[in-house]
Length: 258
Image (cartoon, rainbow, N blue to C red):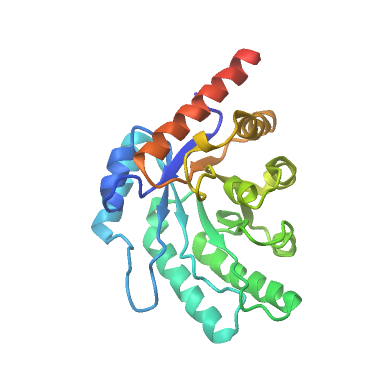
């Protein structure tokens, strides 16, 4: 048995969320619901209430938890109009999924339109405080590190309020970083970890990585008694199965090593 909860995304087989959860229910312990498409006028790919009810039943039957990935295009640090639109999108997702009792709501802090960084930080912190009321607590908002940004980009936001972190190891690898220093720094506030390999692109099987790279991450999690979610953030059966095999093989080696 792994010391953390092993998870993956809700798009492993080419079908909607509910068939994916049925397929994954005996393979993982947490499922990241990918709700990227919601906007202020459309439900996008948000599940209907009857689907939510079945997701609750599946969770109870299989001891599943859910993490919810909020829409990718949120602009929480933008001007008032754009910020309000983003907050409305986030609230729609949270209101619909609240009965699932998500382990965390994963959020991207995009800053494409940030002119003044300090002002952007204050706007984001203000927005996250409001979103936390809908989520059920600041700790349930997990701020993810993004590729292409400086490693400490989100740090001022995390220091201002009690949000959690989502450490995306794959993003660190994609940008050529040694993942261990960042993981060690962030782990005390980390609720979710995203793990995926870098092949021709990111979000591929861990088979694309050297064993030593993945082992270093797993060793750190074991050493620090991490008991949160590790999401294999891949999007097809082959990448999921092979990634699970990598994790189990390397964890078995760690156990045998003592």
